[in-house]
Image (cartoon, rainbow, N blue to C red; front, side, top):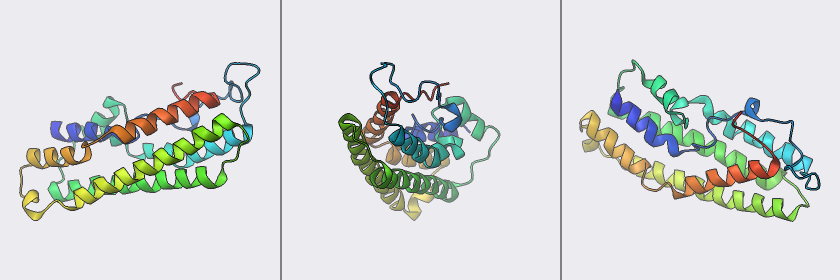
Amino acid sequence: MKKLVTLALSLLFVFGAVACNNRNNITTENAGTTGDATDTIDQAYYNTYTGLYDKNLGKITSEDMFSSNVDSAERIYRGAEYPGNRQYLTDVKKAYKDRKEKMQAFIDGLKKDTKTEDAELKKMNESLIAEGEKLIQDIDAKIEKLDKITGDDYNKSEDDFIKLVDNIVNADDTVTNKFSDMLKNMDKRLGIDRTK
């Protein structure tokens, strides 16, 4: 069970900053301002952004194994039996493919549906799109590497197999961390507090 928890925690990098958030956690009392009475938010952009976030990234919480909360990851595996190397890998790849689809929908929505005259907001949106596209490529690369796991690898012990998968998916967290930081900055710019 400890090995499953270890892998679950290793997968936390996927949207760690966004996975435990959802629409119910957004504080709207300050929505529309950034704290400065003269600095108002583009309400149309705010509505589109939050709608896309809630519909796509907010649904990533459906599997707590990707939550940034250690307790929720441990809760998933408490009393659970290791499903075997093949099923374990199948579940990991399925989770990554699900995240990729939701990320792609979010990025496509930012491209097509968001409009703003605010130069700073427009630049932040373009940067978020570019970094999101890098993250999608990163997810593709991880899935491709996971696809290269061989029959001999399936014969490894549970510990060794989990370590192999862990090494593959944690090869480089730079893109994920940058995207998460950009989401936080966008939330701050829009006056969204997802911590409450």
